[in-house]
Image 1 (cartoon, rainbow, N blue to C red):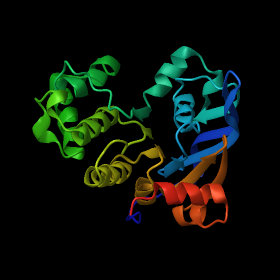
Image 2: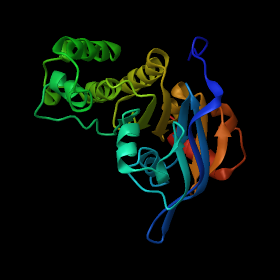
Image 3: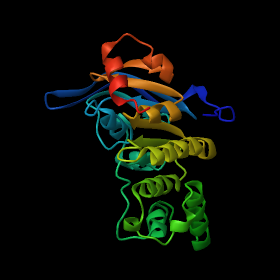
Length: 257
């Protein structure tokens, strides 16, 4: 992965989490975690299913309320802002859902136009067309513009989902299991796309995954979530260079050679 052109500003945290706790009844999912995402960085959050990875990004995007702690996104504490401010802030956050979340009754073009029409009402038809074509080009799927989601492969739907997220030019991207359910070749395409998005759209991203190939090829930094807390953070090699049995088991179980 070539990061020489891309500059990460380690003095500028676009997401800053301190003491975050989240429980569902007696089930303590996040147990007082601290995490920073820096401007221009791809941060991978690794962990087994059910460890709270998806809960974490839902809290960051305001879809779930934290029980305690502070969550600052682009300088605003989202645990303490009005719903109107949260709505405005969400326009700067792109959420790439695991299932792509496309509208089956709409063409690819209409799916991509939808967030524009809803959030930027002053755009002219020519500008909408240009923006749609630009993001389709960015994900390498210009030829699908008039197709329906049902006509696309799983990997294509995933890429269109990312394109729809990019159309509002978010500063922060949240990817939820971007390679889940995809074959190895398509997974590599998605990993490459995540890196291109970082370069070309200058995003700061959190990538939730248990796919170690994805983690290794997209992450500037990796944070390992175990038992509701971040046990290890650093480069991929730093995180896995350990005698911690839980980390070694995770590596041995998940790594696809």
